[in-house]
Length: 230
Image 1 (cartoon, helix red, strand yellow):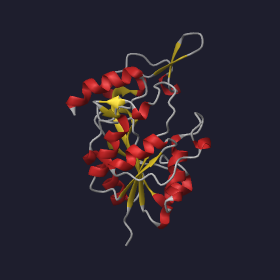
Image 2 (tube, rainbow, N blue to C red):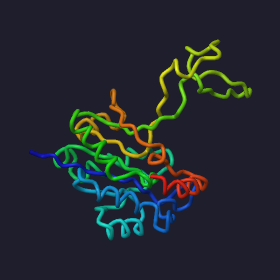
Image 3 (cartoon, helix red, strand yellow):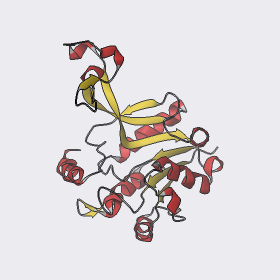
């Protein structure tokens, strides 16, 4: 019986906010190295793939034990192309549902996740035979969330809170946000829906430090300071 699990790490060369982000040193090593090592240390992942358009990233990843069977087409590297498109492209080209039963999306920009977190997400997906998204607690409720209009005025995120004031935090459920730590889905469903976020996915709650997603120079500084806390 085929139970194989593929992990795919999207890592294009260009980054608008932080140049060469995936190869930028984090705790003394290129950022992407941390995610590759976590995936290789996982007890549930059979093959670790990296989708990249750069030969230097390809060479580094292969030297660590990840597989980079081809370089990503340039049309899949544009700013307006969602990262899931490159993941689906890789998955289909390495065998799709004919070779793998589950696929895990691991972003190189979350270097503080643990291998056991990846395993927990995969095992939950396998047990329930559905998609699982890692989330983290925001410490807020929906009442606390506001949008700023063009005029500069605040308004509630949802209509249910229009004209509602002084709500006790304990009276409302906490809001969780999607984290970048790990997403897992059955390959057949993933290729059909073209996203990890289809339907009613299950949540796996991750510590906010593990879930940190590096997108700016400031994020690098914060993540390195928090590294010793996980």
